[in-house]
Length: 177
Image 1 (cartoon, one colour):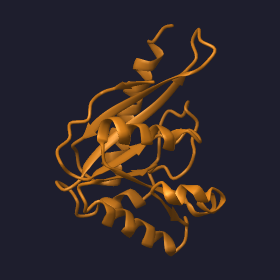
Image 2 (tube, helix red, strand yellow):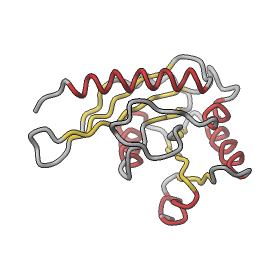
Image 3 (cartoon, one colour):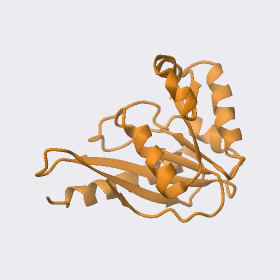
């Protein structure tokens, strides 16, 4: 596992957003929590999945029931967690699993609700997870990090993330052995 990029801790609570490519994403975020960000982790997980894997209740997970009125409560809860500088909240703003080979991501509206009125009070960290085998029997993981310092509007975040993802893809495809 390699981490590319840095996290310049500014003493704020952290919202970590990333590409959601599979089961392991949360574990990789846990690695970032332990080795890089050093905050208590909380993460939003779809209600049906949290009911299926109840042990995540003990690791910082909280549920969201998409396309329901209850989703607003989950978004408010995520926002409230970002009032404590000792917290890191992980979300996947595209709201679903997507292929590693996806070229762009569409963010759901919830990210704006979470960050509403929080500019200057939350540090937003973008991550991109890329897996490669190359000449090895086991895959290697590269986690790319980017401290975002732009506007907290959904469109601006989505555009910045897609640009960052494209840059990561370019770096990743230049890797050899």
